[in-house]
Image (cartoon, rainbow, N blue to C red):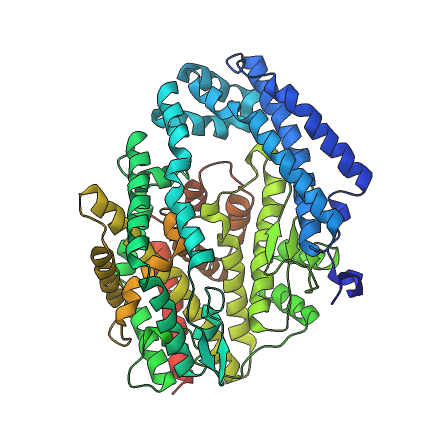
Length: 591
């Protein structure tokens, strides 16, 4: 369908962000013209007045740049066949490079100042909007090296990225797989189609997809192992060069997250395999197979239970599900749905998937490609969670503190999904639909909390092995991964020999200690949703201490303010209890 064939009520109104071409050009020129003014402060940040003026100027320029950058890219995302929109996006990409270059001196120059000077800025009320940023610079000073050492690290940065680049070229371009035969026809197998083929009801198709995919990786396994080992060595080198104990500490330090959060995740999951193993056993029973294999874990266990709601009905369902959040929250959802915050329908040239994107100076936006499926009802709730997290942060913090970090970015969205899940289970009458919803919930726990924790444990072990001098060979990595797979999934699934090589196809492993955030995010969100549903008054804590918090302190501290401490067992107790309750109900319905 062409974009001009879609009715206006299904389109977002980007005019709320930039109202005309003239406004865009005016903002573009103002940003471009101010870059020299920012650069003029280089070498002057040790002077209090100049430092304050520079920080304020950068905020004002950044606000304007953010508007035109997001506007132009969203304009392109709604229809990539619009050449004018693509040209605007390309122009702001170019301006982003110029802006980054002009402002690049600020953090390093502030970091080079004496601690007493930075402390004087932090304690000065006129620097109140910038106190957290400055505190972060002070916190990180211990890991800022001499000018000569920083120059050497900067010169080595491209070389140290080689393993990352090699992995993505191999995964995205060079790896080829044998096609899969389905219904007598050959179906192309790639990393995109693999998930769909693993969900196929025909077990022979699933098995063939599994074997063909891993055969492709195994054919290059020595190269992949050497490349990953090089990536781990680069991680450990960068950490040691900056004076960190290890790469884990370096990776978490940037987010202000203690190492205990990471190790507690692995410990907590390691002590609570029981609900996962129960779920795997139930899957085996419902699939009716003597042996359940790894390629059987993605196929649906409940058929013909899709909730095919029109968009308007999905909106009403999501609003009803969010009632525990209070009238203000539901009113904002309604406003988003009615006043052009959401681009709803697929059209030719539109970016796939879904996202929420926000500038400080306009309301947040959501891009969807809505189809009447259960998954898309949850996607609507998910993206509106991001949307209102941004909205509350915009209204709760100054510009310099409004943007929240990745560590907490999925919490509000998954919390919304959990509230929707709870609402549907209480209101759906069809037992088959209930079984389907429960199976979706349990699979989210398997893939997000448990599977990502297993990945996190693999990364932890691999980096530790390298530090201790153990070679990261194909055999060492694969044997370690296979043992983890057996431990996590238990006796009711066959840990097929080829699953030992799954580590070789995970691109996230080339960004060390990132995947754990999926597990902690889901755990925190489930705990928060549990509190919303069970504790009167907790919604106010969630709104005021989390949704409105932006990035005014570390994400770990923000979660602790919300009474969710991921260095303790409580959030995990809540999450595993929620999963166990779903298992109890599904087992009851399946008797």
